[in-house]
Length: 449
Image (cartoon, rainbow, N blue to C red; front, top):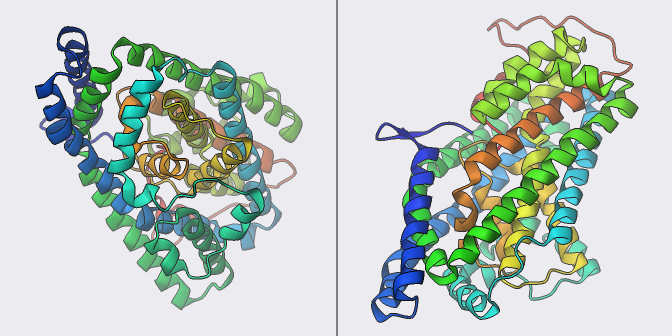
């Protein structure tokens, strides 16, 4: 995640300040005045409520262009699949499998420990109704129930423009996935120009997301004020439980799944692997930016792990965009936690759908500050959870961002280690501009989000 500064302070500090101010004000109102007081109801209904909804609606406005362009570019960046052959195929399959395992762990932890349980159902229902009104444009287009067979049929849009107009996000994402594959297969000067146009759309959308995210500190203060005024200290207890479950799931994936994948998939000692990737892990955690960690990861892959240079460059460059295990896990945990918080029981079928969307979202999530918010918001409204529940997690998101970025960067190195097994090292020369193949488009995307 990029560190954006506003008036001299980094954005994440401003978001933390907004979180603390909103939380403290809401708790004071809850304990000293009461959420039913006339002026409190007026403030939450006419000032803090609409202010938070404006922020959320701006995010919703950018969901479709963001996900479409990011997913198309993410898949199209795998154009080296044709030249790398089986290495590219292994990269794609391992990305899907390991990301799926990450989401399953996250969903399993939330179902086991249920960190969102224990909130007063009457208060939860009150905020649930308020949230449905605020996100009515998207919530109304979400299905009331999901039939497994019909779900897969509905994934294929008969008209992608109608699907986009009706805020049917998943069909649009499937179309973007096929469109990106088409760009890879139909490689020509014309498709290269088209890809440049889509990258331009992505760049513009990311710029707009950056502008919207600058409003986040104020939106967080408003959203947290409303939540804390209504739920009081229950909010802090649930938030602490959420952070514990999210970090616990990430630790399991980091120190159980990754060692097993490295051991069985690459034939390498997990201890030797982690000794070799210490530096990229530290850089990823301290900067919360996979972009900043990429040069260090490349160096560690070649010098510490002894991976073929060609494979390491390809897998780490593509993986920094498409192999975001930590982001997919975070999105799954967050959606289920908020569903529990608002007393919404998701069926097994709905949770499978959440898992699939999180895997796709890991590829189609833009590398901008809080870039996973549109994906989380989109999944929330799909399952009927009020989107302003995002305000619950924004205040602790910086720490979770550092954790999931470390998981993402380490996952890229795991992927490179497994894919490199049995591959030889072919020297790769820079092109005329001095740019290494596969690195040209990284300027558009930064971190794991």
